[in-house]
Image 1 (spheres, rainbow, N blue to C red):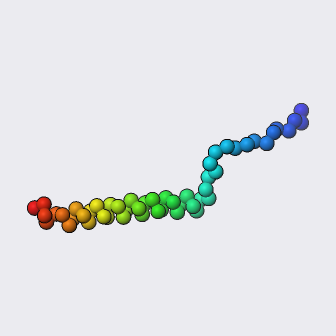
Image 2: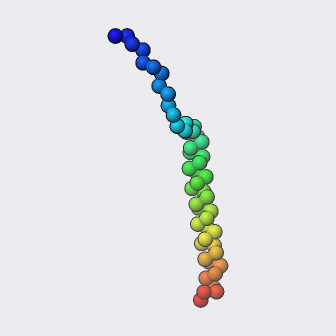
Length: 51
């Protein structure tokens, strides 16, 4: 009745720390914002040429 369960072995990539995941998501957001700003800036520079 008192059988011990064998230790469980988890296979796969371990999750990072919470602060690391938060920093990754913030950096991803900032990268997208910078890309959007660059695209808008290029569009605004080309706007007088397209008129």
